[in-house]
Length: 426
Ligand code: KE4
Image: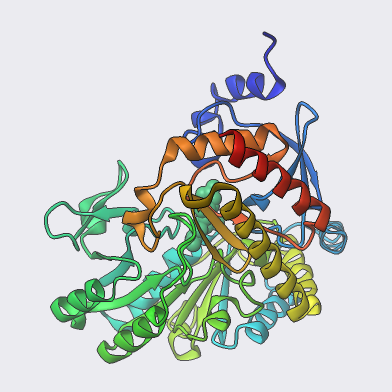
């Protein structure tokens, strides 16, 4: 049978790019088959190189909350490009974006822009250690915070809490100060603080986990983290690279009403252009170079094109306000209910705002363990059924479904129709 253009491209790109992709999840290893290569996108739709149209529920893993090719964002990017792509010097737009972030997320009194979520997290962790003078960082099993060495870890076989590298090339020297707790597991956090509390610089958490699939925080869990970090003099870092400006204009910290000391951002604040940001209390951020001893730098940090896209995106979200977020929430709820109705007890569906995940399991999914016990093969069949019928969802059960302001009532109805059929045929 003739190869599709995606298949040909995947074969060719595999010869000069590891796995034919520039980020592993795109290779479809968790669901099998060849990834579709995308040629263009508009609104809620993406189009592959073989001309097929899909309703897009990946939204580039979060940035495209307004939908693809939003008119205002594209116009802002074009205008910025016409004035020069990058200067390596301060610009007014960086100040404007930092002020816009602060207006929406008041805890971010001072912000540094960088070029990716990984860079934002790596820098925030360094700031936490530089500010507190302490070494240990607590993270949660199943949470992902980008690929900096100290956070590419898994629970060690011995002392469950001792982290060990979760990637070749990461040295134990870089992971020995990372401790691992269970998401939604207050006891595991208490145990770590009782043992090493005086040397814990920070706890970093996805306030609504979305990298083990979506696992919302149990009632009181975030407040518990806020209290225990305060008690021991550790910082609380909310990694809002996904949840920032997605769950609410003020992110998860507004949505759940818990205020961290530092926040990391990415994705939406760049509207699809490369960006990251970290920030928080002025007193903490004043340790950052050039005014403080914690070094961090970047050639394209705060570049004019990313900041233009970010300002246009956040301005549109602010303008849309609570109505826009209410609509996003309702779309997420409608989709989650449709999956549950179609598959019944075969699935557990978690949702946080307009983020959701489908787990093929009869059990509740409240942490990494229960997420990992869900059936990957059933998920793969579900993924391919949807793809075949023009619905582009996450190619891994450990990723989230993302909705956008561009998803129409018709898009949802069409998607629900396909999901209903999948529930009968799979
Ligand atoms: P980036 O370096 O990919 O911009 O951000 C890293 C990051 C940090 N924190 C959280 C909570 C994140 O979810 C991410 C990256 N998210 C993944 C999706 N699960 C990006 C997609 C990919 O890796 O290709």
